[in-house]
Each structure stands twice: as structure tokens, then as C-alpha cells.
Length: 514
Image 1 (tube, rainbow, N blue to C red):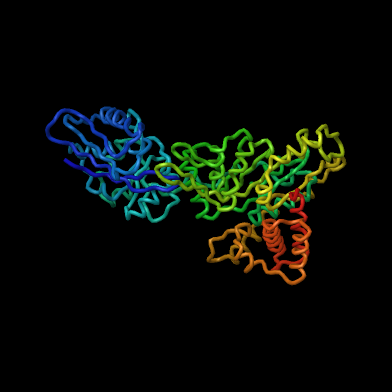
Image 2 (image 1 turned 180 degrees about the horizontal axis):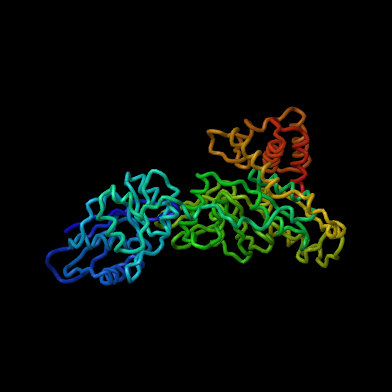
């Protein structure tokens, strides 16, 4: 008897439909044939499935059994086909009946006891089920909690093979009343613990805090340069506290990437928040941008719609840093392999910090620099001009004076909540301005959109032309200054960019023209 189960295969952060066909003949020697370009993990499914069936007191096939994963031209990877293969074998051997099984897309890994384990890409599976017109999707319980964000498709979470069979035997109205139907996204409930850091903890560095506010308001990249101990890392760690909450569409994208990467469980993604990724400087290029023989998202994709913090920027390998250039421009990383191309979104805000020299004290008033001019030049040369050009804001952070450290002015310092309220106001102005456009912030403006939304009077145009003519700004930096000025205007609720907006924007840019 032939049975067909619908499932899906993960491709990057998206899914495409897979059909699992199981044909069990009435005669012939006992033999399992698995076709459809399966990888080693899929081939091992037969051992897991047979053990799970026996553990739940089902009979194993006694004849030749052919299992086809269609389409045959696409390579199948991972253990997600265990559950549909097991169900197909039970249907083909007439050990169960499941009249509404075609209503579902089914995926899950089986343990030897029949317990169903979490899978990667649950959100992609739910989206694929909706595209296919399926009523619902059956997933491992913990994975189903991820997929609940997807609307117009029923999400069922099952813990073992027996629960799945019981669910499939029910009528649709009974299924919708069952405990397997996941209706509340418990994973994304508000966290009562909250964030422990706050901007009011930072003593001094008012200029740096101002630049951080501008960066988050407009989605601009930021580079902080300063000696050890001036507060670069401290400021970066508090940036998540001033980030505006993501929209539901942005959060679905975030969770979809984490789910596809298989790091949803305990990898630091806060409840309904934007990600903050801080990889160590020893990270490889593949670890940062993604890749591998079976391409997985890298840190830049895990930072999508959030923050990528690179501390000790000059300690990263130059090849690793140079690989950031194209993704920073396009917001997408494309990884090509012989079997096709995989795309991962990566619209992130880069927050970088570095010392001014190898010893860290070049230009310091309190410590003597031990580096030669050649060492300083080589150290700063690790950050290429083209990469530096893509960082909108540059800020030099001096040491905080001793009297400021010992003063008791904590009650007068602004809190993260106060700063975040201004950022949310500026973001709201951008949302209204770019309504109907594929834009979320000023940093993503194209050249034509800049001409439309960043118009200048003759006086402001003259000011920028003079900066370019004197070599203070490159052509790319010209656009960056204009976008930053637009953000500063938004923070002041100004309709047009004025001269003092441009002057302030250029102050945060000239440091990088070195």
C-alpha cells in the first residue's frame, strides 16, 4: 500500500515542500530502500524509526519497503523526516488510520523511545504549510512554540509518537479542542526579570551617549575609539536597553533565523526583543558571515534587526572584517555552493570598539604610549578605508576625569527609559515618512531616496560641497553625513535638515577620514 506524507526541507531560512512516499509491497524479502538524495542523517532515520515503532508496540514491515523523498533532485538533510517516515510506514502497513493527514505538514526527529525532539526551522515549516494551503502543521512541542507567531495556520505540538497518532485519528473539530493545539506563545511572554544594565550607570561620556542615541535612532553604524577603561564596552552593553521593541514582522524574521540556525533553545534571545551579538575577535570568517558545506547563518544574520558588537575591532583578522563590506551595504548575505545559492538576511547595526594603538594609550593624558609611529600606523591599518567608510559615526572617547568618578551625580544622569522614549519618537517619524516603502530607518536610504527625503537649502549644500572639495569627506561619507543629519533632525522633531544638524553630523564623521 502506498501512503504520502507532506513535510518540508529547510533552505537557508526558508522552506520548500517535500513529499514522503512509503510503498510497502505484499511480497518480497525484508528490505528498506531510501531514495531521493538523502544525506547520512536521513539514512540513519530508518534505525531510529524502527526502534521507535518497536518501543511503542507497532509491527515492523516484513516485506520490501521503498521510501521516496520527493523531489528527487534536491538534497535532503537532517533528522526532521523521522516522524513523517514513521507515520508513512504505519499507514502503509494499515496499522493506523489518519483520514485528515493531508491537512498537515509534518516534521520531527524521533528518539529511540518514540519521543519527538526539537528541529531547526519550525517557523519556516509553518510558513510553508500556509503557502501550501494546509490547515496546520504538526511539530515537536518546543518547536511549535516558535511557530505560533505565524498566523492563519494551526500549530500542533506533540511530545511523542503515540500523541501524534492519537491526534491524527481525531476529527478536525476534536483536534482544534485538543491540548496539542498551541495557542499562546509562552516563549515570547514578557520577561519579569528585565535588563540589569542602564545608561544611568555610565559616568561622564555624554558625547558618546549622544552618538549612541543617534546611532540607534537612525540605524547607523558606530565606531568608538578610546584607551582601555574609558567605558566603550560598558556603553555597548547598555545599548540593548535603549533599543525600540521590534515590530511583529521584524520579530518573526529574528526568530526565523534563530530557529533555522538551531539556536533557539538557550542562546540568549530575550523575550520579544532585538538580538545583541558580541562574537570574540578570534571568530572565523564563516562563523561571522555564515557558510559551511551545509550553509548556516553566521553572527551577522543572528544580529538581524538588532546589534552586532565587535569589541577590539583591530584584533579581528582583516579578511574577516572585509567580508562585512557587502552585507553592510545590501542587508543580505548570499552563499553560493555547487547545489545552489542560500540567502540569509543581515540588516544589523554595527557597534565597534577599538584602542587607538596596540598599547591602547596613544593620545592619552594619563598614560604614556609605548608604540612607535609605525606600530600605530599598522594597527590602525587593519581597518581598511572602505570598511571605515561604511561606519556612519566615529567617536573618540577620552578618559573620564577623576572628580567626575567620585562625584555623586547618579540621580541627574539620564536613564535608558528616557533615552529610549526619544528614540521611539524619532523612529515613529521615520515610519510615517517611509510608509509604503521597504525602509525602516534613515540608514537604509538609497541615493534616490536621499534626494527625496534629505533635501537641503543652498546654504547647507554649499557647506557639504566645501567639505568634499577639501577632502574632509569622501563621496560615500557625503551620503552618510546626510543620513545622520536627517536622524538628528528627527530627534529634534524638525521637518527639514538645518545647518546645525549637518555640522553635528560632520563632527561624528571626520575622525574616520584617516
